[in-house]
Amino acid sequence: MAGAKKSTSKKDLKTKLSNKIRKTTKKMKDSKLCKSMKSKRMKLKEEISTENKETKEEITFCSSSCDNSQSQEDELMPSPYKKYKLEQMSRMLESVNICPLLPDDCELFPIKKNNESALLAMKSTSSGVKLHGCAKVSVICGLCVINGFTLSVENSPQVIMAPLTHVATTVRPIAVETKQCRKDIYKKYKTAVSNIKDTLDKYEVILLFQSTSIQTLSYPGYPDIFTPSITEVKDFRVLCKQCFLCSTSRYFIEHNSYTEAVNSLRSHDNNTQSYPVIVTAGGKNVGKSTFNRYLVNRLLSDHKHVYYLDCDIGQSEFTPSGFISVTRIEQNQPLLSPTFTNEVKPMLMCYYGHNTPSGDPDFYSSCVQFVLQSLFEVLNGNLDGPLVVNTMGWIRALGLQLLIDTIRMVNPTHIMQFQTAKDSRNLAPMTKEFVSSMTGWLTPQSHACHELVTIATSITPLEIIKYMAPDYRNLAMLSKLSQIADACVNRDSSINQKLTRQTLLGKLQSAQPFKISLKHLQVYNATDSQVKYKHVLAALNASVVALCISPESKQDW
Image (cartoon, rainbow, N blue to C red; front, side):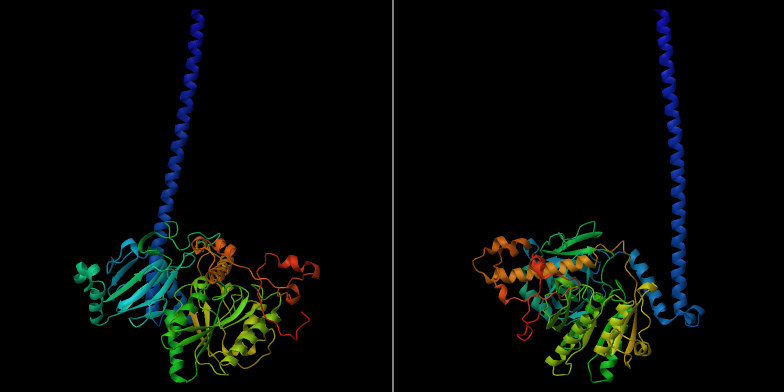
């Protein structure tokens, strides 16, 4: 028995020793891993610090070299890339410095319960605020700029819609007004501002933000695109109901190249009596749509209205994809909201039926020509305002030929060409000589006479872009369906509007359909896919179609 006890005790000792050995070896391994991890972290920190030092030195070197006009780099570098380098430097600095939620030279004063409205007071030297959401804004004192449009006391209240699908809207003060308007504030909002009268006197610009009755729908597949979250922005605060002050690095910036391009148009207006015709050209994701909205808003400060010819069937501004359209934008309807939130109705539309012209380039060119000719017929052959032409981001091979055709049809006074650091996104300089020597898809070589303005810009990295072209096409279609559903619901008084206001699907299901006999219906296939006669009804089922009135003479469709 004693021997057995000794043997068992020996076994226990062995197991204990083996366990200790395992634990010590594990600790040694862990310590080695920790040391290796620490060394890796130290190396990474050193690399980051050296990179930061290099970037700082590069920025200071670039700024000094740009200031020195006699430097060798400036002599060798063409002007578009000079501008791009400056823009890139400013972008680097802006990405490091995220805009504050509410700058020190701004102050917010709620004037109604439940966040229905608020006063935003700003000094004229302030950098302004960045917004997401939806609100109605009025200027009570001073002036402010929103997406290039100067809003004053004389302007009617403007609706701002800033979804998270795009960069935040920037509201910036620019001027000082008389003190007469302050008396109106004190009379109108006597109870609300009685305690802050002395505080308001410190600020030159005062804006009134009010909640709107517009229903910011949660579209199927795109919930809460008007309500920011910490994943979308760094921080946010309620300005008024459905509108938020945001601290973010993604907001609209009025680049120097933008202002230079607009100044070139103003010099044209001073030298000639004709209205400018502007074509914007460039690759994908270079900022054409953002610049076009800014350009239209700046032109509206000098003109009563601006015409917008949209030749981009992939990402249209005022219609769902597949349309070529002309829109007349009035001075009281500036473009303060992006793409699918715009409610401006086009003057003329032509349905191409696809989001790319590669399937039928002849039909695409004929659609552009038809819309342009129809516009001049309506205007009796003469433009009575500036014309802005939006083109596609397809700039290679067939895309370039179609762009040349569009330029020859429009005969512009200016071409705004976007230039980036990526050669794949750049066109050859669209000078008069280059355009004259090019052969289009349908047009031969012909003389061109226009002024080329180069806009240096940087491409947004793909990892930052959350919403792509298919998302914008879906949102444009959902927005149009929502407008149609609203019209149907408002027209039929028997529908319970409280129930149908909640969702887009509820609206569409409540809308009263129209019936038409098949003998009065002609079907035209606008796509590049062949459909057999026996499969026509199956192809039409659950498809979005355009309803048109065809002439009686065309019975062969």
